[in-house]
Image 1 (cartoon, rainbow, N blue to C red):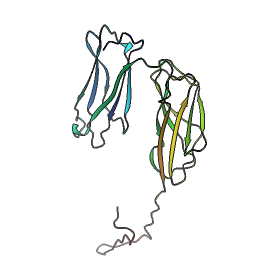
Image 2 (cartoon, helix red, strand yellow):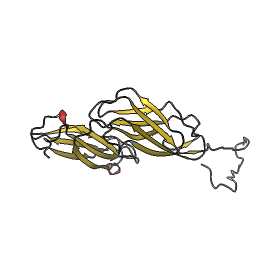
Image 3 (cartoon, one colour):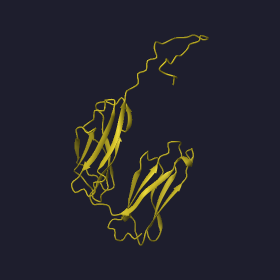
Length: 239
């Protein structure tokens, strides 16, 4: 690939690696041929969780003398136990491009996620934010809204450097105490943002009641005495 027309050649790809069965962790190695030789520019050997993760590498950090090539290699590793069969590593959406100058992306809801038990009326909302642009950026607004209710907006005054991620917790907490599903939408507002397709993320969390367990009165038995445990008509077994 001839990258000479690109002012800031950048490699981006999405990767999935999430072994939930055992301890095996295969390794993904990314190599760049810079026109003269091959060199490792990225490697991953970890569980990334249940979601796809974008990896971005600034190719201006390397001396490129001609057309480039990119090579992805996966090597099995079960030195920690388990089977390499259980740790598939998948890549997608590989692209080489010049990133926008100004672009902030909301990449995920960090907490709360999935399902909760006994969520309260004062829950923190935490999101992850990535500076996809070339320029360091400051003074941008982050917002969230739950089930179409009140919008909470707060301003980030610290500097988020290019290709860096910020984990941001809103000071305005959320009431998630009702036993229901909460749809969370979070977004960024930035003047002169050159790409708005990555500004918004949506997720949901369901709050369940804390189970109430009543085992009745304590009973003392002596050796040789039988005792029958009855799960009652509504249940079938003890755990």
